[in-house]
Image (cartoon, rainbow, N blue to C red; front, side):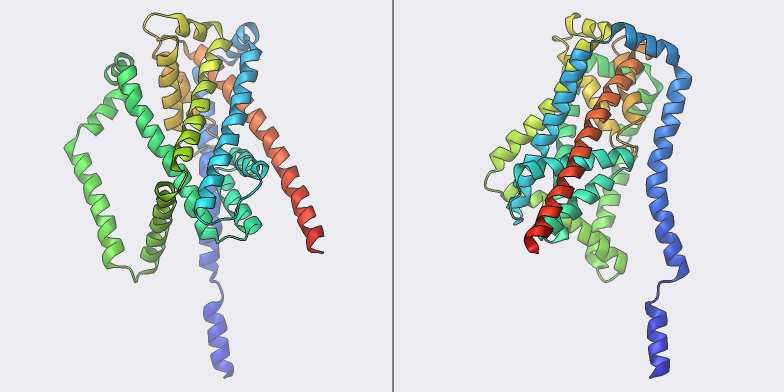
Length: 359
């Protein structure tokens, strides 16, 4: 019996290699985005004169429009919180106060500035514990929430190709990056490889379900499907669509109102063929949205470069593009952090109230 117990304890104890892999994985998860942000910002400041950027901000920035952008940033997160609450209720999670729905998003975005994806993990765990709901269900709605964002981005990319066709073609033909994109997307081997990859994943999940990592992959894919399924089966799907339109309208207007903040972007509003600034606004917005797929701290680095590059398609200099992107990102970060601090205070206060009520 003694030997049996010793063997069982030995087998159940975590191996040093497993612990090392666990901490190494967590370290890389946070270190890679930080390195990407830092590297791209350093490269950006080597490319432009920072003194010229600051002079451009001091001499030409109208901070009234910056304030309007910050207000839209807050409202967009509020609408997102209400939309996620609708999705959670459709999945069987008890209704939360509307302020709590806002807080889950405000807090998540603030944490994502510090460590990417940390906010997503926090809001899922917080809602699961607060509402006493299965964590897997909450995670599934979160994945569905982000999946619907991906669908919107793909639609916006298609719309931008139609509305800003000359500028997109200019990017695809004159810039090396654009030519690389064209070469990749027009190569039949790339599409064949994508088809083989998808087919291979399906075959693995279907025929090798007993393997541990396959079960984990199958579970994650099931959660993704559950998140999407709730969207399609909810009773108030039309409200979900309206809230989604509201979110992305606010996102676009954040970029558009910032065009009024600088003299060089105001010219894009009145210029010929610009549709009152809607065409360049759409291009800048779409480029910035796609850059959020790159792991970074709240988009710092990839988003700035994407916006700067998009503005260059309309004749703006690197200094002007950098000034625009840094002001917009910085003041967005200010309002997001402020809302995150409010969220922390709200969570702490409601938790104390809950403990008192239980006593």
